[in-house]
Image 1 (cartoon, one colour):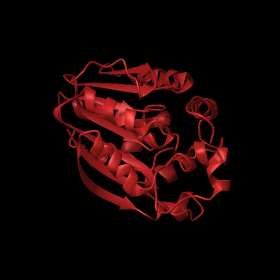
Image 2 (cartoon, one colour):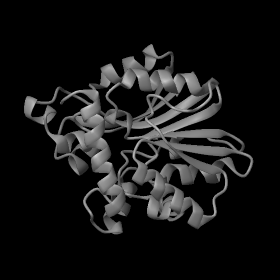
Image 3 (spheres, helix red, strand yellow):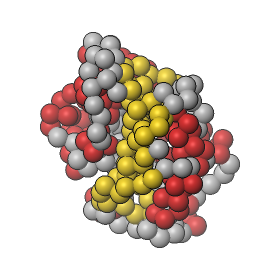
Length: 245
C-alpha cells in the first residue's frame, strides 16, 4: 500500500481521529475496557490508566515485563499513555518513563492525563520511532504494544531500539503477526492498515528482523484467539516477546 510516507500519513490521520473520539470507533469506555481485559489488563491496571485506555493494544507488555524501581523505560508508540502510566508506577520516583508517538493529538492527550494525575516521573515526546531523540545506551526497558506493525521500516525500528538500550536491556513487545499471506484486496485496505493488519509481517519474518538487529528472543505468549475476537478470523495472532540486547 503506497510508499512509507503515504502509510505514515494514513496512520497519523486515523490515530488523530481516535485521540479526538476517545476510541477506535467513537464507542463508549465500556468497549475499551472489555477489549483491554480480553488482552490481559486487570481491573486495577485499567483504573490506573483511566482515560488513557482507548482499547487499542493487542497485549499487556508491562504485565509481562520485569520493570524494577529506578529503571528508565521507553514506550514506542505510546498513544494516550496507558502502558506509560502502568510503567511509571513500577519504576517509582527514582525511575523515569518516556513515551514516544508520532501523532501529536495522542501525545497531547497523554500529557493532559499525566498532568491530571500529578505524575512527575513521566514525559512524552512527539517523534517517529524509527528516528528518536533518545541517547545511545540510555534505556533499561522498552515496551511497545501493537505498534511496530504500523511502521513502514521495521528493521530500522528494531535497530533504533537496539541503539537506545543499555547492554543487557530488554524489549517487551506485544504485536500482531500474520500466519499466512494476506490477499491483494486485504493488502490495499486502509482500515486493515490502521487496524494493525496490512502492515504486519509473517511471524517468522518478524522474528528474523528482531534477530538481525542483534537481539536474543524469548517468546512469552501467543494469542490466537484475538483473530476471532477482534479481526474477523484473519489468519493472525498476537505475539508477546522478550528481546534481549
